[in-house]
Length: 172
Figure 1 (tube, rainbow, N blue to C red):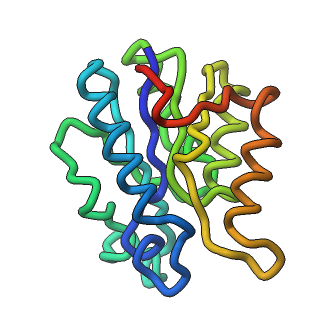
Figure 2: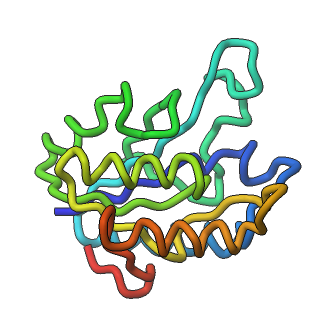
């Protein structure tokens, strides 16, 4: 079984000053993947990146809340992380194993940080990592446009670190 993992789809990242590339399309893609996961009985995990008290990503800040557009139904596991790698200091690997998951389908934000480090870690921890090619995004950087960042990471991660699949082609 594969679990769906959605990284950092938070109010402050989606609706903040640095708008993510194709953010609205990503929400639609994630909604579709969540429906497919539910229909297959696959678990859904959502990570919230949080930081120290008093920071913009204080755990109690509304900026760290999962975007309402994802329409959570209560059957998801929402957890906090403090590092780019969603497996680091979170217990995610144990939760996946307890649910009998041998693989994880990785989506969300931001491509060059949390998506990248979590994808690499998943394989290292023995999980079959699947990266949804059209299921992650970021904002433009001073050096590269977001579209180039995403294309680069899809090309770099595919093969050694994960299986790269389009959302429409993935079956749980």
